[in-house]
Length: 272
Image (cartoon, rainbow, N blue to C red; front, side, top):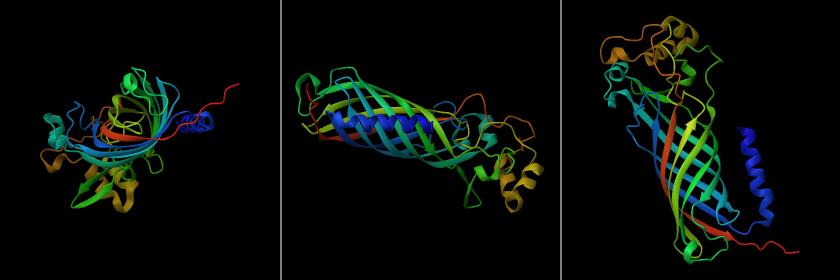
């Protein structure tokens, strides 16, 4: 994923010397997590999202876009209609910092030369690409917020925890509309298909609580408590080896955003 992002941004800027149309943009909106704690796309606990990007329009149909984004995500079994999830009683929250490399396809010929209006003044579009992101799931316990990855809540050995840097496939769609010769309004939805199932710290089975406690030293009791929170609401369900999450389906998250882009320059390619 890191190599993919490096190659994309190299292409974006190396070929920029002959670019005819560049834009700077910003977007803001809401974000939703989907995974083991919200498997039914219930869109519980919406978060906030924001992004900054630079876009190079190759022609009237194709654009390349690189950017940085931020969002907050959270979910709780207590908000689920599933009796198993209510008994499991897990929850998490995280901030996500992301770098994206995307390509856009305009369904209609969209302005290629700055200032062109008329038929190219708006277009629906598709976007696809990849991203790398940093996250750090946490849960609140006895009034304090604890990072879950370093507690090994599913029995991971110290040093063998899942990575907090992961990659994703990005897919989305939107519409862009000219406001002026220089400003464009964009309305967009995009989803991330992650290469990890640990965005929420939930994936596999319950581990032996003694094993967790031995691994985590002074934080052992907290790690055990956060690995199985069923006792807080009813009977203990976290028997060793029992399903805690679904390892066959990775997590994901979705943005719904609105933004503005500004045309920063237009260069004419030399003719020979």
